[in-house]
Length: 323
Image 1: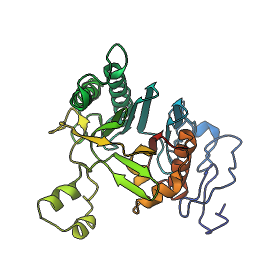
Image 2 (image 1 turned 45 degrees about the vertical axis):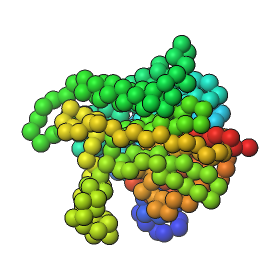
Image 3 (image 1 turned 90 degrees about the horizontal axis):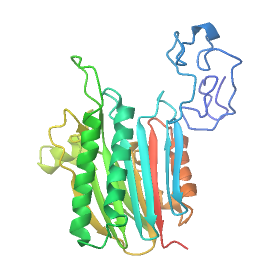
Image 4 (image 1 turned 90 degrees about the vertical axis):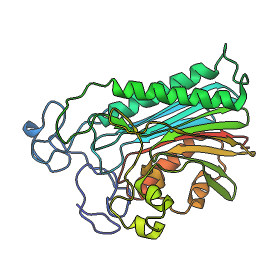
C-alpha cells in the first residue's frame, strides 16, 4: 500500500502518511496485526504484536478531549509514530473570569511517563482550582497569591509523581514529566513551568511565547558557550534540564505573571505541536480568532498530525474576549 501523494509505503491501519502527512483511507484488517499483518494468534492479551511490537487496541488516553466550557478546551493525541500517549491535559472553568489549564509531557526515557504526566496534570489542576474557587476568592492577595498558589500546585504535582511506584534498575530513570500550568483570574494569567512545554499568547497579527524552555540549548547559549545556531546543531539541543521526578536536581518552577492585553487566546502545548511552528505567526493563522476553543484545539492537533505527527501532541486553549 502506498501514499497517493508521495508514493511512500504505508501500512494497514495507518491514518496518515508518515513522510508527508497526507490523510489515508484507513484499511482495517480482519484480524491480527494492523501494522505487519501477523495473524491473530501472534497478538498478546494487551494488544501487542509478537512479530513487530505494534499495539493494536486504542487505549482510552490515546486521544481525548477536555471541554469544561465553550471558551476552554484541551485535546491530547498519541500522534502517528508513538505506540502510546505519554502526554496529559487537565483544565477547569471556575467561573467566567477564572480558569485553570495544565499540560504535561511524560519523559519518554523514564519509567511510566504516561502515569507521571497524568498524575502531575490532575494534581496541579486540582490544587490550583482549590486555591481560587470559593470560599477562596481569587482577588485576595492579588498576583502574589496566584504565584504562591502556582508554586504550591507544582510542588504537589512533584509529590504525586515521586509517589509512583517503579523498579529501580541501572540505566533507567524514575517516572518523570514536564509541566506547564496557568491560572487565569480576571486579566492576569499566572504561568508556571518546568521543562519545554510552552505557553503562548495569541492575538491578531501577534504571537508571544510566555515561557522559556528549560533546555540544554538555552543553558549553553545563555552562558555564552555556543551561539544559538551552533547549539541547534547539537543532538543535545532539545534535552530538558528541569522536570518533575524523583531524580530532578532542580524542581523550582519558573513563574511569571502575564497581563492579558485584550482579546486573544492563551495556549499551552507540548513540543509535539511547537516543533512544527518555527514561525510563531503560524499559530495565529491556525487559531484564526475562533472563539470555539475545542474547534481551535482540534485544528492545532490536526496541524501537527498533518505535519508528520512524530510525537504525542497536547494542547489546552482558552479563548478570551473573542467575538
